Image (cartoon, rainbow, N blue to C red; front, side, top):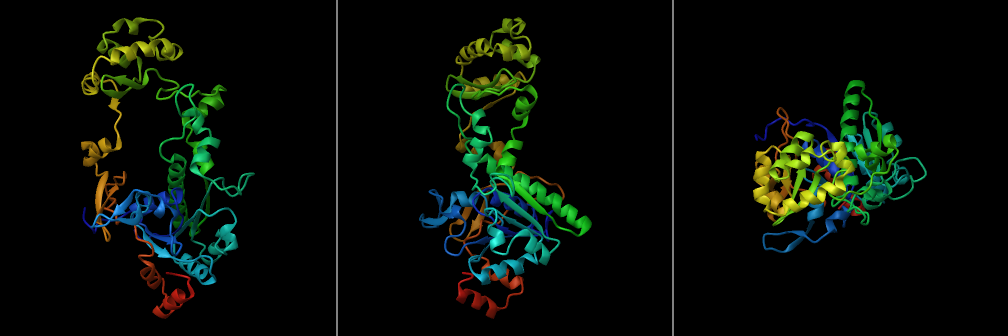
Length: 407
């Protein structure tokens, strides 16, 4: 892709006062789309996730650096500015930068930004065009507003863990921090909508994003199951609450997924398994009947699947037009030819290691493509550049450094 390709958010400047995952995930998407994202970090330690390892990126000599794999996953394409917000000078730097930015994203506890004089009302008085996005665990109001919010706790409080895990087993969290990630994505959508409104009216606005809200919203059909049906959906393990068979099956050498979506596919599956009579049985002829009689049906299907290995079954299922797939580990995923062909693994230059492998962006835009990203920044890597661009003179920068406001 040409370096001169247009980018959808070219010219948009984002002041990123977030750390860990939900906020950085949001601002990483904005950076992928071409925004200039200035990541504001604490001098000395920076984003908490820089130390969340091992594993850490290794330098050219094979020695661990201070860049954790966790930090690298959520900060590509940004620039790092170190500012100490506990100092008056540091807070003044943020206020000055906010007058020159389009978006500010922060995930401080409710009230912290106001105590620093960096709240939405203060900064939007200086820059009415500013889109100010706050990400917290529980939002700016309500009885839980003052609580700290963490993905794991929110998955429990928001009901997701009650739906995840084996039937009859203990509740489980999802393997990745989905409440954080969904909140980051919803925040991105809200910011883009607010920018469109700002471009039409000249006015920015305030966005109040909460992990709990996002996690409840993503309950999707199972949330509706409870609200409309008046029933609590049970944990189904790898099965589906409303479709049968739609689950993982053990085969001779591992596991595979079968996702039958209609009665015609079920008939073909039965023929493939040499169980054609099942499709004519009134207990299994329709999906609704199969859901009611899953405890009888599934063991019969499972016994048949054990007869062959994964590759043989997948080839036969695909040939019969029955939705299916392997259960890959992550090494399989990143070696998969489709994943590679779609650019989901990228190598980008890094000043410490020479290059760093990153997961690529899934967004494929025809007119404003997502260019190969810059590596996640080292702590404070762009401090002087960002301040000079904002109009700070060398004497001012030296004084800020002397006073400990920047590093």
